[in-house]
Length: 235
Image 1: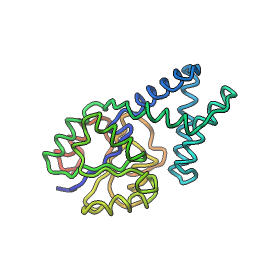
Image 2: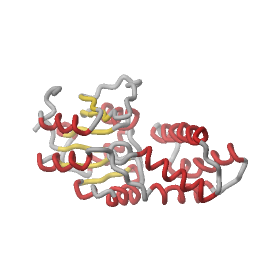
Image 3: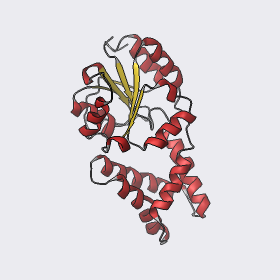
């Protein structure tokens, strides 16, 4: 086998992040009677993505992100002062209950386990929430190791996040491949750390960072075909 270990991302690789975020955001806004138009939701998505990029680049801590996200957004759009951390805790409680899987993931995990791969996770997220969502989705049992940035104290693509991950597994980077949707976090992180990655580009985004994953797939059946060919060449 070319690899012994596959690292998966969680959000928008295993679990449908867009559906999860949509559910949590509508639940929070409905609970507080804040109007949420499609345009405001679009603005929130762009705003939130910007904050997460700053987190991944080390410009923000989780604590700062938690406090700022809804405090600043609600103040800017409604002129209301709220407890940002309390609102984020409420949002996360809704977020943690949403666990819609992306198409094909369960069959892929079953196939990979039968092939003998060690299946692991490295996620930019909180330990309890990610484990809880994976359990609710019925896929936690397939993974031998689940590591979050909360435990590592660093977020992908920071190399310290990968240092922590590989300190928890006996398989090294040279026998590992990362499978994820995030260019800025997953693919960049693996490339800078010096091991292979496969870009799960099911959202049909452009490779604006000009990174070099060994393969790019749009769905899980394509990933299964790669495993069937031992990742040796295009099918």
